[in-house]
Length: 222
Image 1 (cartoon, rainbow, N blue to C red):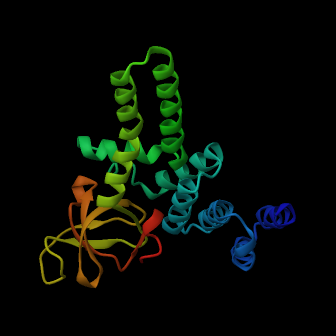
Image 2: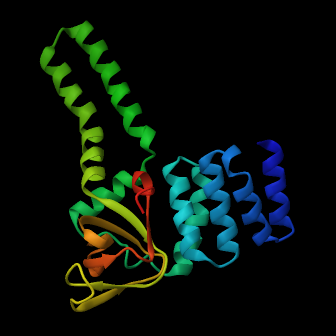
């Protein structure tokens, strides 16, 4: 992989971003997924294809790519897309979804194992079953919350500005428009690829995912 990373760097330094995208796609199978999506996002950002750049940065984030490198690029892309204000969480549920999204997925398992270890040690020392049970509940809560959120909601990046309707068909009235590059949080699904936008709240309504890409474990559905 080191040789491939050197080749990728050459495309950056020569500003051959189209060539970089082609090269990345040609060696995709031999690269770590997070490396592939991060670099593809960076090349696309350089080409000013900002919504697709964000999509790949978000995938790299989900795959635990280097946080400091990724956060800066993602911040710049979101600023250029001008979606920061509309994505500001307003409700408790939206704050919870965004909070869970901030942590790498391995964090939840690590937290569970740590509390489990502490619970075991305390039980051996104090023989207190009630304390052990409370700690076990504490250990399970983040994992359970993450699972509930992931089961109920899907995330997507709008790759081209799309109309939002007050029902799951374009025969309904258009109530707003989801701007290019915004992250939307979806729940209900209807036939023909219609989804209900729960958040951001200003975009609440029905959207057909013709110009949007689903993230995380749902990315293979679209």
